[in-house]
Structures are given as structure tokens and as C-alpha cells.
Figure 1 (spheres, rainbow, N blue to C red):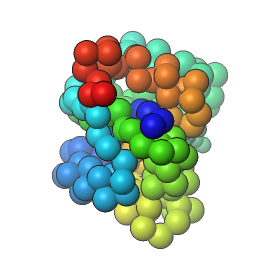
Figure 2 (figure 1 turned 135 degrees about the horizontal axis):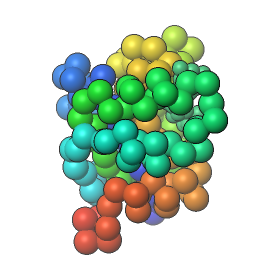
Figure 3 (figure 1 turned 135 degrees about the vertical axis):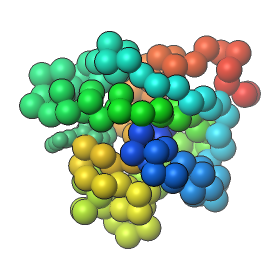
Figure 4 (figure 1 turned 120 degrees about the vertical axis):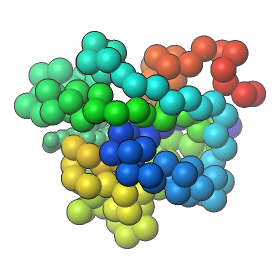
Length: 138
Ligand code: GDP
């Protein structure tokens, strides 16, 4: 069983799409083994997205991710990282495959509804950024 980190972004929570996203996750076979809702401060968001600090879109990224509550989750399953990336679709909703979460619920590349870890090292870092061991169902 592999674990990955998922974030339902503010535009999806505020847009009333969090429940539909969770249903799609469960129907895909992935299990939600930890979950909470919170609102990131600009400092926390900057630390979470530190790898993008030098990108032109960094300020916009921080603004979007702090615009409202997010739902952070740990998902578990076989090939969870790759499976969730497939379910999310491409970063740009317009280019994402039909039926993917970003195609269905994304508004733009910066408001693309969901985030998911891109590899095992990132998953470990992102999960421990938000959750301690007691909060993750085994
Ligand atoms: P992800 O792993 O598919 O979420 O993509 P990245 O880690 O590369 O980027 C993180 C987030 O930054 C994306 O989900 C987008 O919200 C945003 N982002 C990525 N590329 C761009 C871009 O070219 N322009 C803008 N405005 N935002 C971007």
C-alpha cells in the first residue's frame, strides 16, 4: 500500500465540489486514511510551496491557496501517487483529460481544484507537513 497527499483547493471547497471530489476518490479505489479542513496562512503556504518560490506565478499561487479553506488528505492504495495523479488530470484544466477532477472542477491553471504529490519523496514531505502518525489510519 502506497500513500499520497491530496489537497482540495479553496476554489473547489468554496464552490461546493469537495464532496463530489471525495466520492470520485473513493470510487477510484483509493482510501481516505486521514483528513482535515484548515486555512493556510501565507507563511504556511509559502513553506508548503517552497519549491516554486522562484517561479513567476508564486505570489498568485500563495494568494489562491490562502483564499479560503482547504481539505488536506492522505490517500492510500496500490500505486496511490500515480493513480491520484491520473484521477486529477493535467495541471491545466483545459488540457486535462475528460472526466478528470481538474477537467470537471478546475477553473484555470492556478485554480485547478486539487493538488496531489508527484513522487514518493514529495508525498512523505507533504504528508508530514500536515499530519502526525496518530492522525493517519493504518
Ligand atoms: P501539480 O503538481 O500538477 O499541482 O503542478 P506543479 O507542482 O507544477 O504546480 C503547483 C501549482 O502551481 C499548480 O497546481 C498550479 O496551481 C500552479 N501552477 C503551475 N504552473 C503554473 C503556471 O504556469 N502558471 C500559474 N499561474 N500557475 C501555475
